[in-house]
Length: 155
Image (spheres, rainbow, N blue to C red):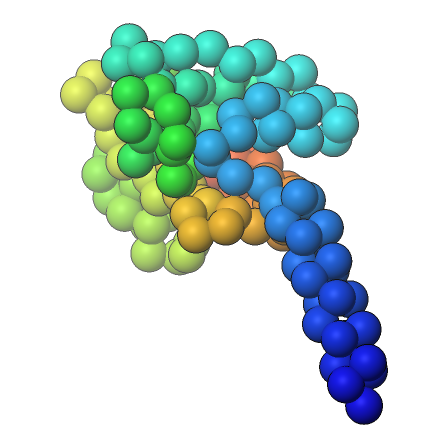
């Protein structure tokens, strides 16, 4: 019986270790770049003016960024935010932005100082990150939210 318990404990530790190795974390920006590239997206890792990592990419011809937050001097970040900003000739009303936010749980929209629409979606990767599959699902959801928002604003 004791041997059975030890074997089960060893299997559980091995499984937890391999699952942890697969986790996507904000502490590993290059790992997120690699994941996006493996999904067929061009992704380039850069730094913000503050020195924090940021990934630049595109979906269906529209630019978006992945910002890293809760960082310690550009390292050990905890969360990410998908972001897309749209420089439009036609200014949207606050009512149009509010209509988006009232009917969509994901993808927070707002107007910037110039009246241009912006879209954001936060992903918490703190406390161990998330599986590659779940991060990919969140990312696919982001690109879907972007497409819906672009339709909403007439992009």
